[in-house]
View 1 (cartoon, protein in one colour):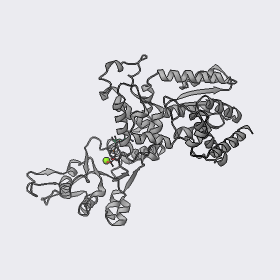
View 2 (cartoon, protein in one colour):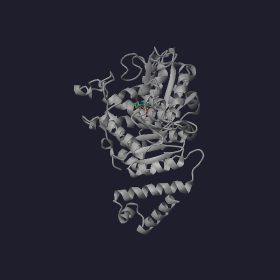
View 3 (tube, helix red, strand yellow):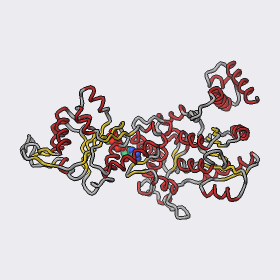
View 4 (cartoon, helix red, strand yellow):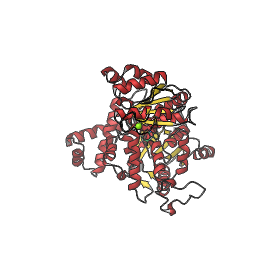
Length: 481
Ligand SMILES: Nc1ncnc2c1ncn2[C@@H]1O[C@H](COP(=O)(O)OP(=O)(O)OP(=O)(O)O)[C@@H](O)[C@H]1O
Ligand SMILES: [Mg+2]
């Protein structure tokens, strides 16, 4: 798909008007998705990074203002055009104040709308940046260092808020790169222990004997190489928080020793008979399925229950794709903001914008955003962070990151998501109409690509030419009736 194809969400409850508009917009090269209610529009915005939203102001249920608000919240750079039924100046001014780019009043000529669209696109093209909105936006969706606006993340923030106050042991599980360590730190920094230490120990990174010495400390001569007396991490974390990363990798012997600490809050340094009492809050993390390991007999059941007092589950990024735009903004700021050192090398680009807004940071094209939203992210947030860092480095002096700045596998992801409108609304769909709409879109796209050559279009779609012609006839018939 060329970078220039603009994806447009059209929200209008009057079906005939909506259909006509959609058709004419499609004729002008826009990729149009229709929504008949505000609720439906908001669902679609959650699924797909549109370039433009055109919405009627009056809708049954959630009105156009809410649609616009939701669109801007997700995609601060989206073009929002309001259609008002009454044409009062007040409505229009209010909409613009809320971030709409332009408005048209009913009844209007199609050209009027097209003109509004084209000038908005031009304006957007010239305007490099909107850092101000972005930074404001983030504040509402963060908890300590964690960012997210998906329901799963907001539920997590609430859970963390509650459990931080207690001293209960927490087990954080999630795939690699989902933010388990950030969660552990967030809990500590939000707890009454925040003034004390957060001590981390990665149980997977070191051999058993060393791990034991790290955790409990040792006295001089306790083992070969123990030249002096050393405090273990448990002691260091006294009154604070001990973060045990990758607990699933502990040997049976270490599991038993840890169990004792969790039960009695006491231990001895290696080579010493003196028992030390500690007050630590333990947060453990794992990316393996401990419950399964218990069933298989590789992880102690009693230890599992001791750790799993409060389970915190971090969903993989592919299950909360709506967090991607926010995370992208966050990482863009991190890697291209004034403090990152990237732009400070070029003083002319850090000039504050007129109006006292903060200096410009890099943006991302919507096509690139679509790729990021479609990709499966096996390495989760860490992989996304790396992808943005790489893209920023490759973008050189440009103000916008393009699809080409992403790795090939990410670039290819958006092809699979070429049909954006694949949500199943609560009240169901008309299956046949839906499928034929997709057929229609694909055929139209193939014909566009081949300049209307049916033979080549059918090759593109892997259809017999006769099948394509047949489908086309049927679709045209349906469109007319
Ligand atoms: N919700 C989030 N908001 C902002 N940054 C995040 C978020 N989740 C993860 N990150 C960032 O992603 C990176 C990976 O996070 P973290 O190290 O906590 O993952 P992890 O789950 O511990 O991974 P692993 O299992 O591989 O150790 C870090 O740079 C972290 O700052
Ligand atoms: Mg980790």
